[in-house]
Every structure is written in C-alpha cells, then in structure tokens.
Image (tube, rainbow, N blue to C red; front, top):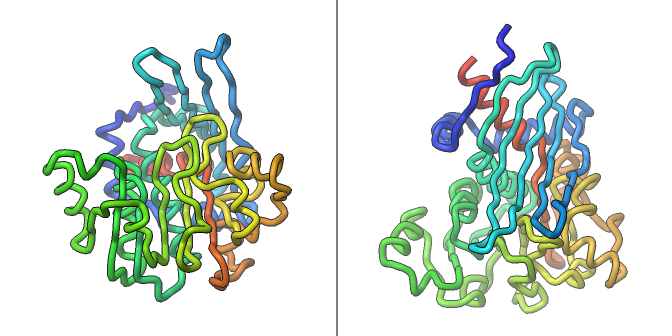
Length: 315
C-alpha cells in the first residue's frame, strides 16, 4: 500500500468542496461529538522565537469514519504584512498511513461560514427577516452563500469599511451574491433593526457594540490569527446569552472570553450551550429577551470532516 498521501491544491479543493453539502457534513460532525464518536482537543498555539510569528495546530478524530487529522496554520511576521497559510493532513486510523494533504485555505473559508450557518439555523428566530453582515472578504461572502436560504430574509445588508470607495466591479460582485443584497453606507445603517448580525472580519478588536442595537439580535463572531482577537467588547458577554461551537475548547481560545474572564467577572459556565448541545436537542432555541451571541473559533474537526468528504469523493 502506498504511503504517499494525495496532495490537493487550493483550486482542486474549491472544485471538490462545491460537490459536497458542507453544512450537512458539519451537522453530522457536531452530532458525533455529542454522541462521543468524535474527539476535539484544544487548539495548540506554538510561538516562533524572537516574535517571528506562531503556528496553531487544530487536531481531531472522527472514529466512525476511521480517520484523524491535524490542520496546521502558521502566522509568519513579515515586513510587507503577515503571511497566513494552512494545510490539513488526513490520516487513517486503520493503517496509520497518511491519506491526503490538502491546502486548507478553501476548507477554512467553507467550514468557518458553514459553521456560522449551522448556528444561525439552530439559534435565529424562525421569523427572522433582516440579515446584516459586517465584512466583505471571501469569508463574509461564503457566510452569505450558506445563510441566504435559511430564513425568509426580506433584506440582506452588508457593510465593510472602504467598500463604498472600491471599484464598481467589486461592488457589483457583492450585490450579485443575492438579489436582496444592499451595500450599506454605515455600520449603523447595516444593523438597523437586524434580527441576525454576522461579524465576518479579521479585526483584532471590537467592530460593534451590542449595547447600541435597537432590539435583541443574534450576533455571530469568528476568529482571526491575531492574539486574543475579538469582534465585540469583552464586557458585553455579561449582558448576552452566549453560545459557541464547542464549549470544551472555545473559552480557552476566544479573545473576548479570555479578557471577559480576567477583567469583567465573566465565567465560561455562563455559556448556555454549544453546537453539539443544540444539534442533539439538549439545549433549546433561545428566547430573545436579550442579545444572543454565537462565537466560533474553528475546530480542527471541521477541517478534518471536510478533508474526509473530499477524500471520499475520489475513493
């Protein structure tokens, strides 16, 4: 048996991912976690000497599929700006051989957005009709792709600093993502009366203050490689119903949770539930008497589940 893994480049990964139901793969993964059929250790952060950057390892085991894997993502400090790459190695639990080495750029974008989509489907009010997105990069666009069909959205409003000054072509690309899409002039305009607000930025610090919103909303937030990155003020966690992708690992990595614990008296025991809880119906859909906050840090298992799906397409 060959021990040389298949190598999948970013364009190949993009093409193959289009052939699988990404949210459905993730739903199964979170149900497997709830049933004890999957293992998700905490992220492992390793710093380079002399402040030259770091790398994060994301690990995971999918017992039912007989695979385990590791995604490794370096953050390399350079004069022209940091370089971030990511690769996922898929291994067989039967033979101990490597099966596939996949450029994880596309996997990361897809699983980040589809995890938010799974959360929005599980947490958003069933009659939610106004969707706001802060950010306009690839990850934000993928969020729109996976979420646009989940509710009967009457409006989809996107705000990103600089987008108004960008080329007509760039703006046209954003509005082509969905017929209901509009580009807002300001953050406030985008979020006015929103039922769901998806924060899809690479910001290291807060991009919105939930206390300024006019009504309770579902606010989703993702991670970036910057140390202790967060998209909402850490103190705001005390005033929201907090959910996350995986309660055993997220509080140890999410910037606003770490800072809220150190400076604002917040405790991870306040987390209402995570995706395994929600998808196994151990936790009910929230009542919107105050904001609902969903935080994902990205799990190694998500990358491994998508890598496995791509591998199975070809075997």
